[in-house]
Amino acid sequence: MFTTIYKNELKYWLKQPAVYFYFILFFGAALVTMWGMSAERDFGFTGEILNSASKINRIGGRFFLVALFVFPGVIGMSVFRDYKSKIHSILYSYPFSKRDYLLGKFLSSFTIVSIIVLSILLGMIMGFSLTGSASENLVVFDARVYLQEFFVYMLPNMIFISAIVFAVVTFTRNVYVGYITVVLLILLRKMFLSILGSFDKDYLVALLDPFGGEALKFYTRFWTVLDQNQNYMPL
Image (cartoon, rainbow, N blue to C red; front, side):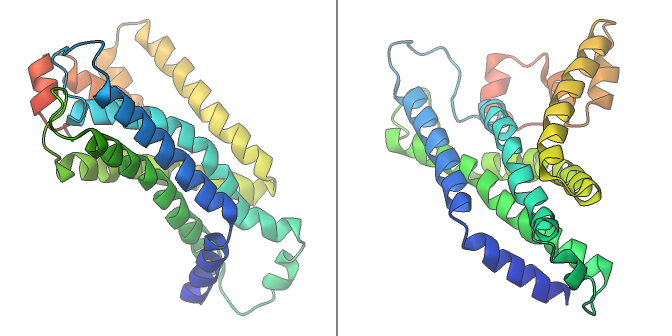
């Protein structure tokens, strides 16, 4: 039954224009940004490689932060629309388990969110390729940089945020609470890290940051420009 729910939900989302709008929006924004940065000559060569692992991580992180606001509209809406249409009382009478229903809803919408987030990296790759490796600010394409960015840094945070949003919307039966939750998570993290940072406890801040960004800063804080250009990001 899980497979049936997952497939039906996936078919539903693939028919929604909003999904393609989000994909094109983030793909286009990343493409134009990277194309503009790599093609810009006025600033001269600063020694920083624009498609290095360090730079991709920083820029990709900013796009990912914006993409978080898409999560409630997909992850939260996947379960909210059953409550909104009052069909949940009928669905609950069908012979499937709570686990199959919730996992089918969650994983199908999570698949869609993953595709949307993946569009950010695809746009970045395309943006750099339009300029070409002849640019002095670029090096030869390295797939490992983008795979690491997605699977090591984006995917865990996607699971973390998605699970929270899905749970909140399921319990409250209100998709708008999902949006509020995303805003609160970002604000509370900022406040929490700011308070700890004022005590100059860098290691503690790195250890307790749920998104992992501060841990990454902690282990790369002494990297030179050469290190940032050549090294892959630490695990």
